Length: 430
Ligand code: UDP
Image (cartoon, rainbow, N blue to C red; front, side, top):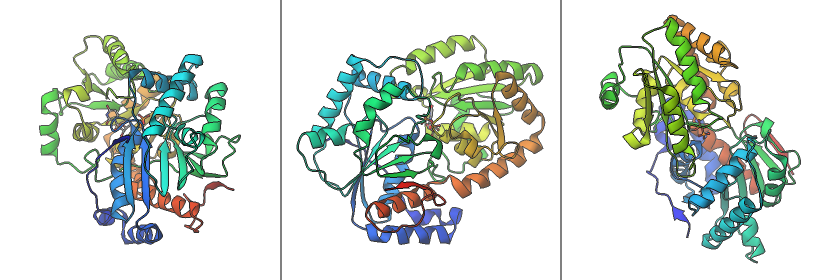
């Protein structure tokens, strides 16, 4: 068996107050024909990053509406996760090298994980490239396919290295369907019959996003030394080139010239499937120098979901300085908390940031600093944007919409109508 992940039960009814009766009824109706269906999500990590974040909520909600949903994580070690990180970087366009060694390791671990995949399901949803080879390995091993298989791609493949995509493509085009986060990310060459578009979403009732009182916020943040009476700006993300924490420090230094009391918090988690993260952390720490107003916070000092929630709620402006981004869940998280967001014009961020209404899209450090300083000096504008952002997320990026669209996709795969997926966007229906 692969490694099962246990989740805490959730009830769809608890979301009624936030999303309204109509949404709850629609979800229950879509789930009715799927009652009792066995479904499994496979991915590479149980914590850290957007995929794990969403599965933590999606899996229990799928169970609550009547499916028998499970989540398992593939097995791997540092060698494999170094290789999958390389593959991920290649597919996102970084100039690292994919070679015979990385190919061999990826194949070997997919083969091993296929052997550990030992039960039959009605639906198997495989997330991202790390475990994508399992289906082909099973079929090459003469195991007949059982159920419908979906490959759920969370990353932006548009600038990826073509040779790495060509390597991966034969493994994914045998799936019954492929899901991308944005229409722009669809690989036209893909032979798969059915392609769906499914932008990610956040859970408003998770510890990461649930409402917190000012007293709780103060208590949660007290060990970390951040002064809640002074303006705080924040970025929460892995430390890597795509998320560019160095650029955030540069922008903060420019802002500080105009708003001397400003503090910066950079939060990162050192993730199991991201072995480079420690090196990057040291690099960023050096870059920040000995500035007492810069806080580098990680899961290793206890900064988990509630702490991130409290920091996002305390920040006057949230930054997401990405040069590349799959979707950028952190943007929706911040908007949901009524914070304006200044972010790189990349990936799924423009879906979330309506320029001048819910935040600002920026392309340079100077632009980023100017917009942050403007929002710090104009709290009423910041407040207005935050409220607009919250409404935008309520309409488009909550887990209930995500669950609904998954149910539609599953119904479609089983030949039931299921209604249009995300505003009518079934990209290719075979
Ligand atoms: N996250 C976190 N702690 C960290 C860094 C990230 O809890 O130190 C969470 C963040 O709040 C979000 C997810 O991990 O829920 C990151 O998702 P996103 O789509 O922004 O980026 P990804 O890492 O998937 O590229």
